[in-house]
Amino acid sequence: MRRFYLNRIIDETGISGTGRVTEGYELSSGVCVMKWLSNTSSIAFYANIDDVVTIHGHGGKTVVEWDGPVDYGPIWVYDPMLYLEQTS
Image 1 (spheres, one colour):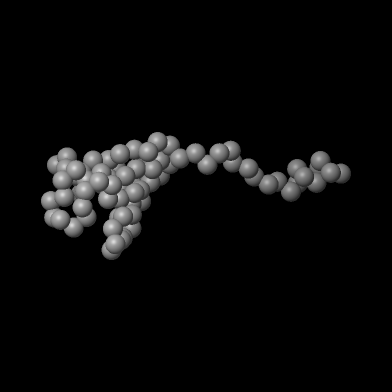
Image 2: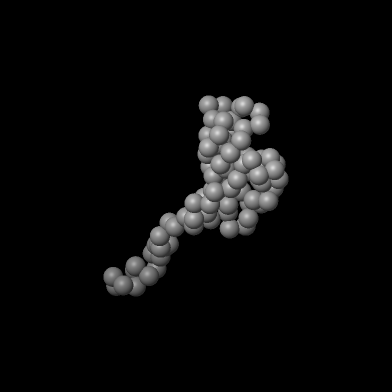
């Protein structure tokens, strides 16, 4: 999973403004979840990042900025049977 922003260089409609206008995540499946950073916000799902760019890129007037991978650290799973074996 990795985080991205849409950086709007030119605001054609005058609604969302310029700069970072959304934040989102690309899931391991490629599906993207994106939230608008405006006063009237919404959340949308897209099949992939190409769809995000096709819909919101406005011919290069809005670009994707990747924030790198999201690292949640090591995954820790509690196994009660292992615990019982170690304490018996």
